[in-house]
Image 1 (cartoon, one colour):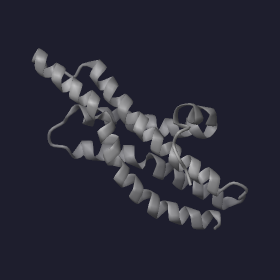
Image 2 (image 1 turned 180 degrees about the vertical axis):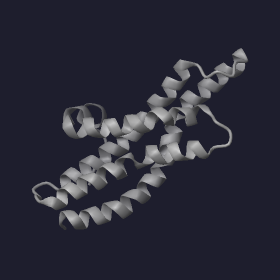
Image 3 (image 1 turned 60 degrees about the vertical axis):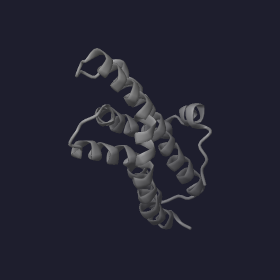
Image 4 (image 1 turned 30 degrees about the vertical axis):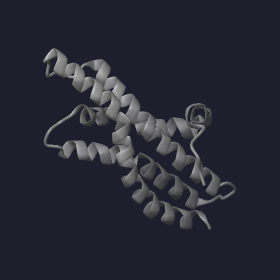
Length: 153
């Protein structure tokens, strides 16, 4: 399969997988959000503590970057040895699909009627995921160091 064929498969199948993975990103931030909510109730404060927001962002970001690692590694193995303009298109679609879970979560947060800690955290998770994609592509050692366990096809 050439680069264009892979790109079409990635665009459709990857986007569906990204939409499903959005749920995992939300779950990854749940422990930090839970602890933050408990602390807010205990103190009676309506302000979200910084440590709670950072903990929630860390969970969401790690899960989101795991998906990024999966998509990057899969694309790298599929396009190994393939040259031409189609690879540029494939890597552009790879970026969009890899960042999709974080940006879908951000869109869901914008629509939420009751804003929670996890919704606020996606404001930071989404752009950091895009930056993480670039870091993983330009410095693959970072990907292997933190997300080497992520399988790929």
